Amino acid sequence: MSFAPVTPLGLYVHWPFCAAICPYCDFNVYRDRGVDADAWSAALVADLEYWAARIARRPLASLYFGGGTPSLAPVSIIADVVEAAARLFGLDENVEITLEANPNDADEKRLREIAAAGVNRLSLGVQSFDDDALKFLGRDHDAASARRAIARVQDIFATSTFDLIYGRPGQSDDDWRAELSEGLRFAPAHLSLYQLTIEPGTAFARQVAQGRWAPADDARQARHYEIAQDMTKAAGLSAYEISNHAKPGRESRHNLIYWRYQDYIGIGPGAHGRLAIAGERIATKALDRPDAYLKQVGECGNGVETEETLDAEAQLIERLSMGLRLTEGAPLYADDYFYRNDARAQRLRRLMDEGYLTLDCGTLRATDTGRPVLNRLIYELLG
Image: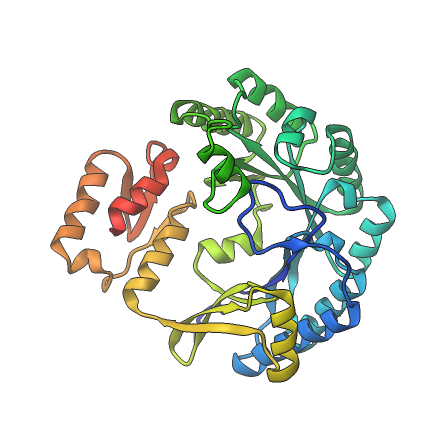
């Protein structure tokens, strides 16, 4: 007798508060002015209890505290959520419990308290080792504190990662090589390298519209991407996702749940979720504003703003938009529209003939040529 494998389940907890709002950030964030720890613990646990009552119990493969800056949250809230998650769902024996932190919040005492609360993986928002670049990016730490924080995190947590941003205006190829070299000297097991993008509604978008500065051109962005691929590969970090690099077995379990289009619960202001419930694929979103979230959870027992059943085409768009970011690619199924729609099938064949995509044994992948222009490919493929 054989048994179908249990699909991994993740939990995302959004902490919406930051000490300062970075000019490139378009997340649901608010300035931290102090919180009622008991009220927030009660709300997040109640929201989690709501979802535990709606879906079949299975152990969490990952729990991710994102934001915002969750390292600013009272540690009692982190501990309460971890305890509730273990009680309501159970934790996989290899559960990954990640928390995002900024270098200025990474003092040894606080990091050890976070670890004692159950966090076993830390994600550090370094962004740059250049003081001028950090000022431009609106960060509240300097390069020296970033270096100290990485060393401290690696000493306390068995698993960690940090972020760097490339493609900044004025950043030369040699600047990027030097900065990435410095990051690789810490011998990270995981590293996230993000291209600077100008998101609508951000302070950077307003500055660019006013002509105060211009983003790096496409050619420079492409060179910086290729530099990152070459240097991380030489350091033994595989590019398992378009912006993420890891030693074998050290990939982010939580982010793989997103990219493989598996199930995850989202709690906290503005959090999104994707869940299979009663044979349907459900997209959920919590209320954005922290005060509205707390109020509704207190009155209704959950913070849900919207819940939508996704049809087959919506699921396909999400599955490929996420899955093509992975080196492993995304599955195509017999009932996907590429097998029923001649125009879309022709676009797929054209992109394959041009060397941007491959389809092998039912798995669609972006090639080395396709990955740097993935957003355009997805638009062409799914339009």
